[in-house]
Image (cartoon, rainbow, N blue to C red; front, side, top):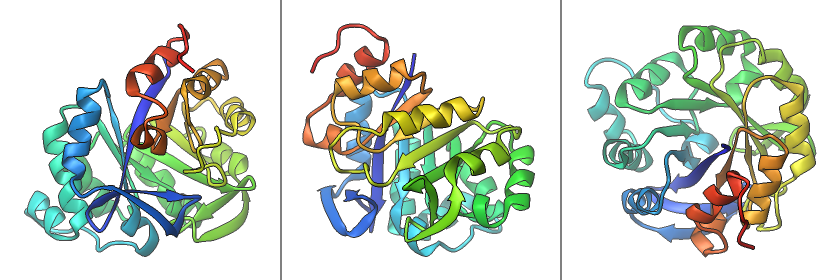
Amino acid sequence: MMQIWPAIDLRAGRCVRLRQGDYGQETVFGDDPVAMARRWVREGATCLHLVDLDGAKDGVAPITGGHTATSFENSSPNRAAIAAIVRDAGVPCELGGGIRDEPTIAALLELGLARLVIGTLALKQPDWFRSVCRKYPGRLVLGLDARNGRVATDGWLETSDVLATDLAKQFAAEPLAAIVYTDIAKDGMMEGPNVPAMQAMQQAVAVPVIASGGVTNAADVADLAKANLAGCIIGRALYEGTLTIEEAHTAARGTTVIA
């Protein structure tokens, strides 16, 4: 069955959603991300997708030395919330945003995160990304965020000339846990996902592809499941109530869809 990943996006320690990755179009959905994580798990979530938006945009200080958990929690409000969610949620959590060095990868995995999403450095330092994929097999996710099919980096503030499918193919032979593919134009817009683009990405590689951006209702989930996506990330639709986790799981199983 296609996996359902409820999203918790963090900015300044709060739970927010952006539109099309625009930091100027922010909606705050809560001041307690841990309570939000508990809510999604209570409603049936079996995994959580966490994003450090400040880290994605500005980068964050690497985690080095001992006292990993303490150092991590003290380094930013978002990281304090992330550590608390990982301790409290009881389900696998993945994290993306600003992960740009190996000491931080090691520390985050030690903290208890199931897997980590890396995007910017996969494009900018491909040899480094290959090396950490091989060092941490099955624990790293390639984050491909695309604007008009081309890879965006640095919290979606920069757009490259590289096609997302081409970058995916470069790393398809590495021991990736998955690829998270986000269509920025659809993200947070509540207009439905770009199913053809998501399907094309899944057909381009053997790596499981997680679709992100635009999922609004159960029919959208069903469409992605029919397109053989391995999973989908759901954000604003859950917060605004156009879709529940139960409805998403039902649609992912290919049973009766609640429109």
